[in-house]
Amino acid sequence: MPLRITIPSPLSYFAALVQSDAHFPLLEAAASIAQDEYPELDVQQVLGDVDQLLARIQRRLPADAGALQKLRALNQFFYSDLGFAGNVNDYYDPDNSYLNAVLRTRRGIPISLAVLWLELAQGLGLQARGVGFPGHFMVKVNLPRGQVVMDPFSGRSLSQEELVERLEPYRVGTHLAEDLGLPPLAPYLQAATPREIIGRMLRNLKEIHRAQQDWARLVAVQNRLVTLLPRAWGEYRDRGLALAEQGRMAEAVTDLESYLSHAANGLDVDEIAERAAALRKALN
Image 1 (cartoon, rainbow, N blue to C red):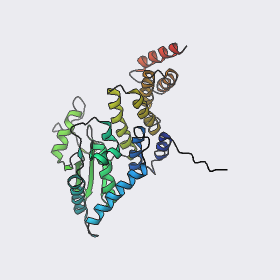
Image 2 (cartoon, rainbow, N blue to C red; image 1 turned 60 degrees about the vertical axis):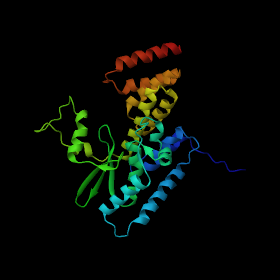
Image 3 (spheres, rainbow, N blue to C red; image 1 turned 90 degrees about the vertical axis):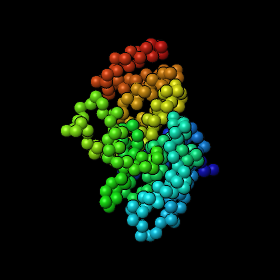
Image 4 (cartoon, helix red, strand yellow; image 1 turned 120 degrees about the horizontal axis):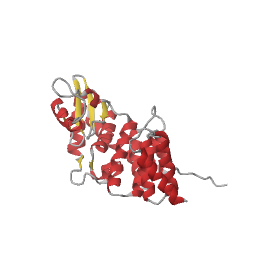
């Protein structure tokens, strides 16, 4: 009897990767997102390409290189020699979120560039983490003499004053205020978990597809968000609304009812209840 090999679907493969916070392979999970757009993508090839980049930068460094020397060498290699940079000409191109495309074009958005940069930094032994800064993903590196916060879009380190300036638009109208009218930076520079990073990558794609009313691609992203964050009930609501746009009424009702049963205090529950009722009526 011939051996039958079952190849997991992209979504089930993703689900296996993100099921445990203790063993969460950030690079692999991030690379797998592209399988919705590139069904034939070999994720292991993407990982291998990054491993080759790591080997190249490792060969440049002496065995006794210190953290600052490693950081400078990595930034020279990543931004100058390889030419990685932010895609300023087409920021909202979905390819900016797909690591296989970012590796090919050397263009991305802050979070996709950060995922690649972090893999190399951590491979060099640097204490580097991602930072879910409002509006613009950052990375930080702990050095013997302090902490460096860097914009992965450009590779430039940012001063405290620059960080406060970037934070300003996101605190207007809030209660955050100190003696000088400036909030402390520390809460905004906490390390992001791998799950949070993948969630932010998916939500970037979500906003692109929603703006373009690309419901099929939006549902694919929502499937991943629900898998990644099974108790984020708003994602069920948003998937249900996208399913309704596709005419998949029964599935839409199921998702909207899941949202309503868990988000009783949501500001939009009356509106969503009306939408669910209308969909049920259409089904009948």
